[in-house]
Image 1 (cartoon, helix red, strand yellow):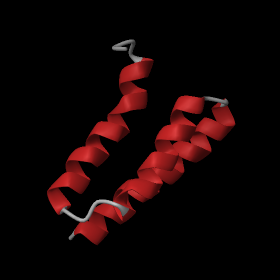
Image 2 (tube, rainbow, N blue to C red):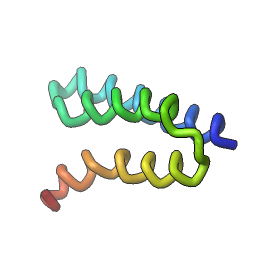
Image 3 (cartoon, rainbow, N blue to C red):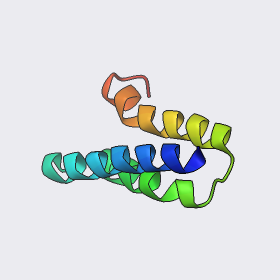
Image 4 (cartoon, rainbow, N blue to C red):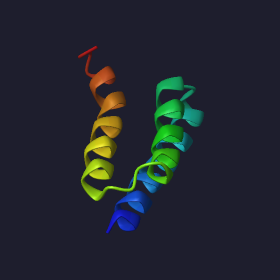
Length: 67
């Protein structure tokens, strides 16, 4: 199950990297890279989901002005 979620968040990371490159936004580039790499270091399924959701929400929260 961890492999499935790792693949899902890696795909989201790839989309973030492409978007960040097109928009010249380093937040999306860095977040995309972290999303693509972190599942290799986390093996617990619950942690993969929690960390993935938190990292995925960083650019959205930044865009809305939450930080």
